[in-house]
Image 1 (cartoon, rainbow, N blue to C red):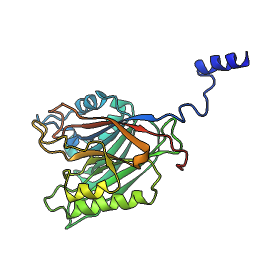
Image 2 (image 1 turned 180 degrees about the horizontal axis):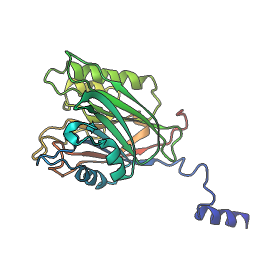
Image 3 (image 1 turned 180 degrees about the vertical axis):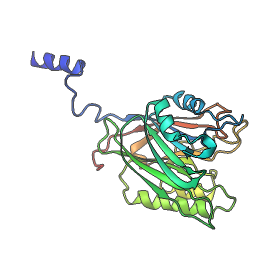
Image 4 (image 1 turned 30 degrees about the vertical axis):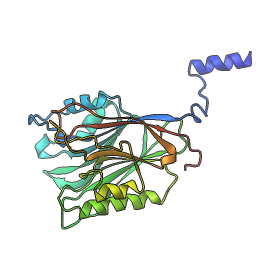
Length: 267
């Protein structure tokens, strides 16, 4: 009788088992999207359209690049906060440069609570545009400890010196905590086989092995947007695709479904 009563209480949410799903892999739907400050290739500024692209794949976590924060060119809107409201997700923003009376950088949207975040400026070469990596600790139900999620945007110039330095920077950071579950996603401005991606491959596992082009948005022929995870023992990739929307931004959004295995050793 006691067991029956407990089952009824659990069923109606009056008791929640502490170890619910703790031994089962957790599915994470991850999106990476360079939103071009919300301006599409039709020159229309439309964050509602961006949000619709995001919500089409029911994401759990989104890495966003080229986000404006109260700049003159985007009507002084806090774009990260507006996207959070449109998607009903938690948000953090990492500014990297001052621009147009406001700032410009990366953001993270999360279905799950963000415990804390920290924005790191990436190495800067020859006074280029300052780039960054926004780190967030996200509490995922059924996962011991937390997931570290990183949204980043590497330098775009032909000389890859800064991109290589940035790849080494993120590798050095994650290698300090080899058992920590980490996903990094963003616009790396380089392709599979480049030195930049080859350096990242030493510490990360890409969700796709063969190229899946994301630019130019109308007829993509290059992939520069990626989702990577580590350690390999904790993640399986279930699905990866490039979204077919070709107007809302100058990049196509890149999407992966990963399974995060339980790891009771995480802090």
